[in-house]
Length: 394
Image (cartoon, one colour):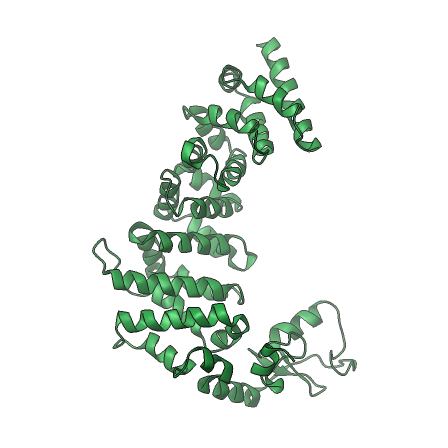
């Protein structure tokens, strides 16, 4: 028996997920399961009880309030192994400390650091924290009714920083439905204000949150709302123009937002294309791992006519893509660079002439002689053939 099995009493664990019950429901067979787990089992076409294997003539579920009450009581006391990590502090006491208006910023920071230790040292303890409703509380601490200004106290920003860090880790073990709170105008305003005045760590965390929202069908509406918040997009693009700690997270956030078709035009209008080109062409960013992702994000935006125009009109646009075709160290970003040039050179004489003057033909020949994949070579040949045929026609 491992340590995790010793922490959660057997009766408090779902027979399917083996995790702590979050919403226990009982079937007609008398067996209790966690609602999300049994719903997934039934949705997969299974018509039997997972434990007894009896056929379910009646698939209805009845909430098990008694078990839920027992689990809540147990959580309030705090499982023994959790108490060994955070001596002298119950989970309930930590929650009250975060909720209390009387609790100082210093006290909240101390509590949040304790929760951070709990999350890092005992990953399976996350189910306890979620069951206690800690995630919505953490998000409230981040986006609550707090005035975020240039002169906001360091302690207040530290509370936001620690709360956001904990919330992001717990989100990995939870659905994203709780993020719908960000649809409230006040929460969205706080989100934008934190992007403007927050620390680099806060901005990185917010970008990670945007990425999570944009990568899930569960929060598609929220992704569209964020994509329509022009000030937020400007703040993300701003990160790309400055080689700062949050730049790479900004690229991932922008890339995730562009996965929604309705967001692309807004991103282009707020300077996303210029921001990506600025990052790609920045010598200090050239060796960073986010450069290939930036080129890939740029290719996505080139699917829109205004995106292609933005690259052509940017003094460094075509030049940056040509330089990305062949890199001696690796070929990450090469395929996206070739595809991007194909998109902008197809209908633009200006783009073709600039690409040729920047040495695109030599770059493509070097790429064809390299050890890159067959797929990249095929695209390189297509672009080379296209440029040569168009040059003869021009």
